[in-house]
Image (tube, rainbow, N blue to C red; front, side):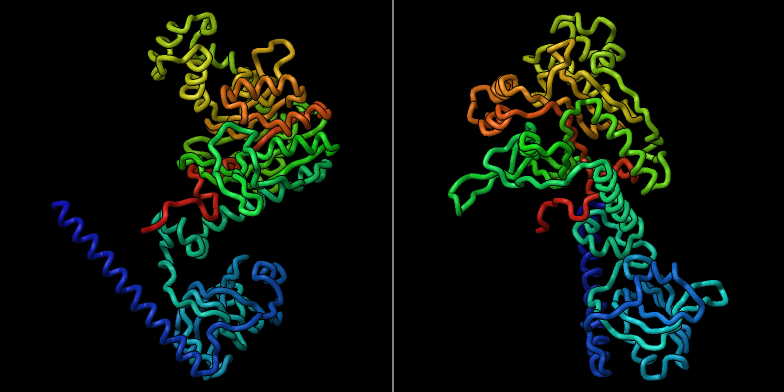
Length: 494
């Protein structure tokens, strides 16, 4: 078939879908008008529920009088009896709507209820002959009329982009999506609970900053009219959290949004959630201990298991996690003499291994490209990669036995970095030097106020930053970051 015919068929299918959608919408509006004639307001008032449906199911007693509200998800008309599924977001329950029991007028009016409508019901709980927990409806109230047709019952909302753009439909039509976000909510709650029980305090720092810092990334820029100055959406909260360490807060964390004006792909979204944790008088090891306690806690309380299917394999979050140095990984992959090779030899060896290197790269950059392209993605089980070259970690202290290496870890899971952890730099002189090396000729990028804070005395400390979106991806076996963000960034629809 020609491309022209394919295009015509596609246009015809789209037009037919639009026409069908309009027909459903008009029919629903007609039903709404009929309900209005019968005295049912299409967009009602508050409804006092006995409890959420999940709680009603838990407190079940035969003939217990209850009031419930929710969205009608399915309806089966048996003539003088209608069976419907009511879902309020916590769970579903069957409604038993019988003409003799309900009364003829209310029963006939219910015929104008459409899938997706919200109703409130009064009735008694009972179990049907088939063992289905149900509510025998004595009366019902229309709470909100759905004018648009919901997604098809058995297949849900299938188009990937529609699922992101119309998340409200995705959540009502696709139980697996709702379950994933319920897990995300629970994961965040348990992280907070774990830290608060250990004396950490949750704090808030500016999301709009006069100078972006804490990471090397392109910021979003805006203008603050009241102060007539340029401002930046934060790329990381690190420098402000360290100011709080200077101010005397010894165990703190912040869970909030970061913004980076960069690309979108399966593991990156320009607006993302991170938790950063800092502990005065700690170091890289204390941060490692936090992760080895917090992650199993979250797995146990939210998932009920520490083993998670991810891609073609199974992640095991039972500690202790493997710890291996960056240099040892390079030697394992590229040979014991890798760090004795000259630049040209290293470039040649990297290209033989399948890694393309830019002509001007030095040994350090070639090494990191090999690590990034060949090694990191092979680290499937939870792994702490330690002793990273200091040039890549300007906010960390160097290792006591080797000033060319930073006393840090990169926590890698499923072949992706999930979390860095540092022995934090608290020497203002060394920090200024690291900032200057990073800034090059753009010395205005050095955050002088932060240096001044360090000069006031920051205690030795450990810190880490855990990407919540990626963490949720790991624990739910999800491979696209947009599937764990309720409203991911998308190109505007034209």
